[in-house]
Image (tube, rainbow over all chains, first blue to last red; front, top):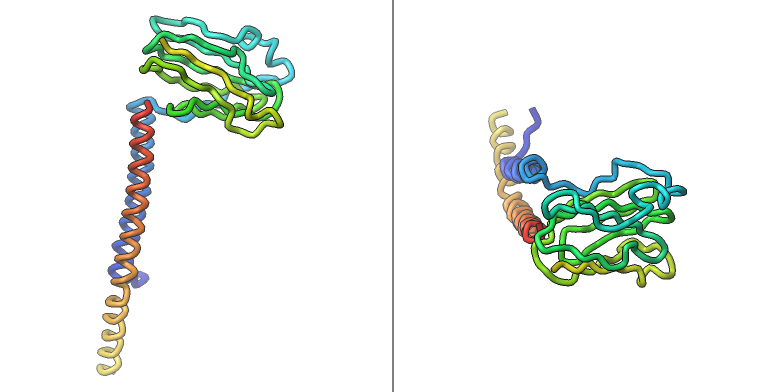
Length: 156
Length: 48
């Protein structure tokens, strides 16, 4: 048995315990509150992405009572569709892909923050509880027009 | 031998004593990390 001084034993225990608590909390949130980071599991050929359903007609589609699927194509240097109108309180399932380079999709002041990678479909679910204007912007540097790459969501 | 042992014990106790400062500062760093973690987590929860 290695002789660890008492104080060192205390701070090691506290450090390891806090890591375990943080991890358990993340697991608890995933299981009980269904909170996950954006999903990248589904793949798509980036060369044919914009001609493959559902990305051949991006936009908002109702899939249930106040529940929508929002298909977005991110490309150099815009998001399609440009402006999206969503009813207040709607649960929105984002489905995003890109035919060119890596983009980001962030809605400031919300938890919507995705990385859009060519060849992958990024998915995230968010409920728009508050009415108002939301900005969608690209937060991964994608080229000279990166700062112009934005779009709008109107929740009413 | 007995003398040696008592010297060893003294050294050991001195070492324990010397770790008090390290213990306090590591707790301070720990509390700062915890506060930052909690505040970021609260921001996340408020935005759900």
